[in-house]
Length: 308
Ligand SMILES: [Zn+2]
Image (cartoon, rainbow, N blue to C red; front, side, top):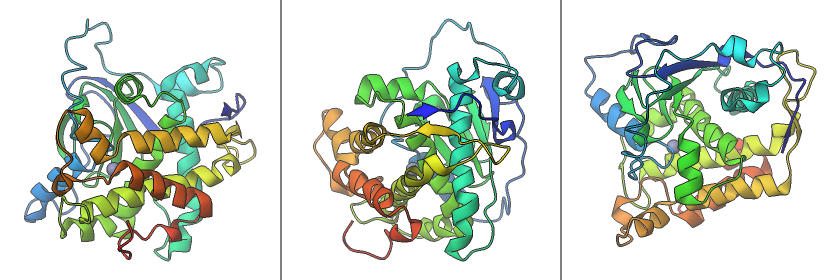
């Protein structure tokens, strides 16, 4: 993959909240729509904590106890990722912002085809260690996630180191895959798929949770197919100069590495399908590939098939 050094990034699509419990950054304090009253809120929190990419597999405890050198309230994405900074693409935040721009550019175009009006863009919040969200407090151990209550994506970028060291998912293209998966959850939220899945089983090989996660993988694949078409803020310059088959393989390998069965095996346990929440390695690989091959989210109906 080659990023376009000349691309102008839309810096409004990400915030850097920095470190701590999340009080210091922008984008917080958004009221929970329909909050209170609904018994489903607990359900949403639980679903969110499960609906993390690879969530719930014990990444915690790795990110605690560092030297505190990065304490503070985050950084200014506008400055860091603006064209005035020629080195911006060396900064992981700016690269991730570029991926977010590409993913949302794709959905701006593609979402209306799904027959539910216009796509509503949302922001990715970078945080370190812990963050307050509309879905409650979360720490880095839960992995990246989408919170339906505030409609924001959250990621501690150190997650990618975890992916590389513990799951062998080393390629850079793992990163846009992770983000595209989380934005897949945003799309599901806009379509009302999340809310429907909330009523279903939250674990098991054919559970609503597994179907939701596999669909997010499929949506990520659909984006990947069209990623090189995505343009920067000016609408003229491409965000990616190139994406190769090797990059796509990195995404597939990542999806495969974080299947429920692989994670259960890696943690020394027996494979227990009743506890599946994201799908097996084979399934995650298959659905990402399904999205990629056709390049069409309409091919991602994981709820309407028995062939997961
Ligand atoms: Zn997910």
